[in-house]
Length: 170
Image (cartoon, rainbow, N blue to C red; front, side, top):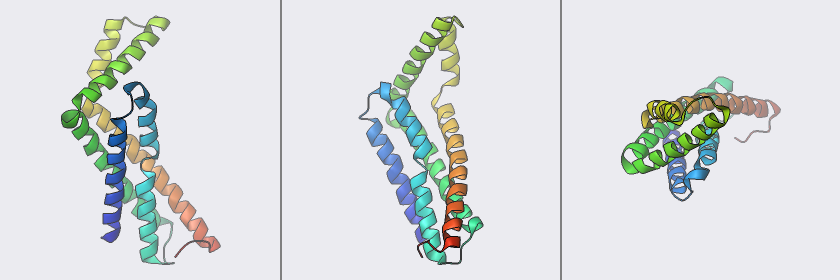
C-alpha cells in the first residue's frame, strides 16, 4: 500500500508539473514538449514502483515480479494522464486545445498546399473531425500504456541483470 501511495504521488506530481509548465510555454513550442512528456513521463513512476517493490522484497525478486509492479504503476500513470488531459482540455483550459488545433491545422494546410494534396477547406474539415479532446486523450493513453509496458520490461530486465551480478541495492 505504501508503494502504491508513492507511485500515486510521483504520478500526480509529474502530471501537475507537465500542466504547470505547459501554461508557460508558447503554443508553437508545445508539440515537441508534449512528445517529450508522453515519451519520458512514465519513467519516474515506474522507477518509484520498481524501487519500492525491490525494497519490500529484498533479494527475493525476479523479472516477473518487477515487471508486474512497474506495469501496474505504468497503467496507473497512464490512467491519471488520461484523466488529466480530459480535465484540462474540457474544463480547465479549453482554449489551449483550440490553440493546439489551430496550429496543427495551419501546419497541415501549409504542407498539403505545398504538396497539392488537398484544399485548405478539406484539410480543416478532416482535422476538425478527427482532432477532438477525447481522441487526443485516448491516443495519448494508448501510447502511454504501450510505452510503460516497454519501459517496464526494460526496467525489469535491468533489475534482473543487476541482481544476477550482485550489484543491486537491497
